[in-house]
Each structure stands twice: as structure tokens, then as C-alpha cells.
Length: 145
Image 1 (tube, rainbow, N blue to C red):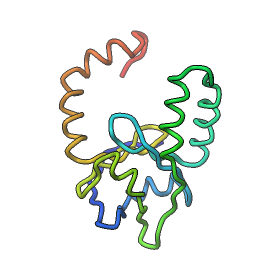
Image 2: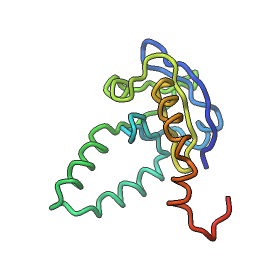
Image 3: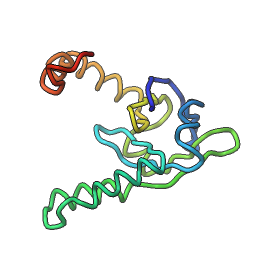
Image 4: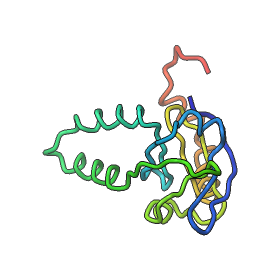
């Protein structure tokens, strides 16, 4: 399971270090794609395959399903580590997530998210104000945190 928040920098060539404990869980090859909320999603190959199977079940005749799968899969790329333990993020994905220098790497259960530090801080501030309300809507009343 991925969890935690880490600050990292991306260099001019689009390379960044991912925390060592995340690298172990991601394996030698993994998938990076456009995520939601202007971040990148990073999946270990087995998790990507599970997600792919779920997305294949979306109805082809629904325009929203076609649009989402196009968006999600067209941005996907299989990546691996260089000798220094860095990932080279493609320019189209860096542009999508506004990744320029300071980044935040999050562990989110079955995936890693890569955020621009500025976008993450804005998102976090907005979400922090409504966290209790969101929890009340989403968490079953029998579930203790």
C-alpha cells in the first residue's frame, strides 16, 4: 500500500526521484498517466491491469465512457527507473500536471500521485475546509476512523 507525502524536485529533463519505498512497491516497470485534479497517477503494472479490465467494461455507446477512456489511456506510458532511481516523465504529462520544479509525491492506497507543489497546496487548502463534510457523505456510519 502506498501512503505518505514527500517533497521532490523535477529537473529540466523531466527526471525526478520517487521515494525508495514507493519504488519497491512500483516494481521495475510501472504506468504513469493523466490523473484527476491536474495530477499524474502512477500504478504498478498489476494494479494497472486491474484498472484496465474495469475500464473495458464501460459502455462503448456512452460518450462519457469513450471520452474518459481516451483521456486516461492516451496519456498512459510505461516507465522504468534510470540508474539513479529516477523516472523520466514525458513532456505531455509534465505539461498536463504543470510540473516544473517543486513537486509533491503522494501515496494513495493502490497508486502514487505526482502533483505540482502549487496545485497541491491549493487543492489541499480547498479540501481541508470541507474534509469533515466529505467524510460524513462518504464514510459509512459503522466505519470508525
